Amino acid sequence: MADRFARIDPQTLVTPFQDHGAALALVDLQDLAPDAVRHPPPCPLIGLGDRDHPAAACCDLLVEPPVSLDMLVTAIEAQPKAAAVLVQLLRLTDGMDMGAALVAESMAYGLLQGSAGHARWLAEREPQGQYPPGTVHVLRDGDRLDICLDRPEADNAIDRAMRDALRDAFDLAALDRDIASIRLRSTGRSFSLGADLAEFGTTRDPATAHAIRMATLPAHAMAGCADRLDVHVQGGCVGSGLEMAAFAGHLTASRLAWFQLPELAMGILPGAGGCVSVARRIGRQRAALMMLSGRRISARTALDWGLVDAIMDG
Image 1 (cartoon, helix red, strand yellow):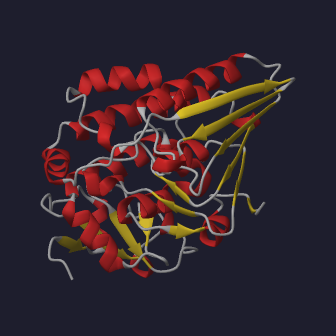
Image 2 (tube, rainbow, N blue to C red):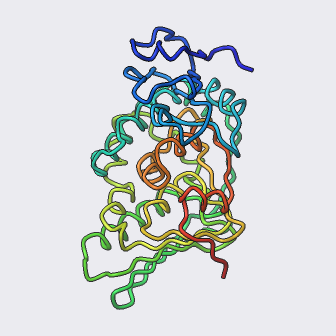
Image 3 (tube, rainbow, N blue to C red):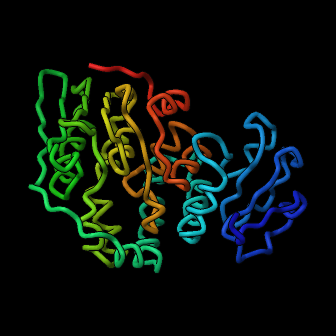
């Protein structure tokens, strides 16, 4: 077991947390009163025990399958500053207006883009394969708008051209109230394995990158038409692919679909809207569990948690 966590006495949570070198803090729920956490630590506070315990809401996340405590400690200790920023963001945006929460997410993402942890990941990552640019097909049929990701040879990794096309399509959907139904689908074996990793690090100035995200991220437009959005995912649904899909008012998955948010290992956090969309689908504790562990979850677990609304094949 790792050595940089604090297993804390509940009384410590009544006064400001003193162990500023701790990567994370553990607390047994059975020892906590419901209102015990007046000053949450600046690092992830992990609860051990029953999710239904009255004090469970005090914690940033609870340990539950398929994630183990060992997995969490290992992942958090590898990128402790990114983990701290992530849980602080989730606390801040819980219940916040969605538009404001997306701005806060982008600022936090920009902060981590300039961090040593992310720079280390950029320097150490393996060379990325080169694939042809992707396409987003947009077809309007009466009051329905069909949007399809088409880059199957790259498992629908979203490049800049696809991102911009998605923003244009969802801007149209958000503005035109005559569009009653929006369907987002993709070709190939995977819904999307997230943003194209080959494009990471191309904009190194965090302020410039924040300005670009505010102008181009599809999430800002998707938030305005989420109630009309229907998404079906197959195969891998990872990173920004999951972050976008989670905005859907109705989200279904194939039986063999799987879901993952791996950004912490890169020294960053989900920055395509996922700290808002995923947290509002499954709650900030399970969102933090996915984000801090980087662990894949199955379609069945996604259904049990409410990440998807139904499992459907064909």
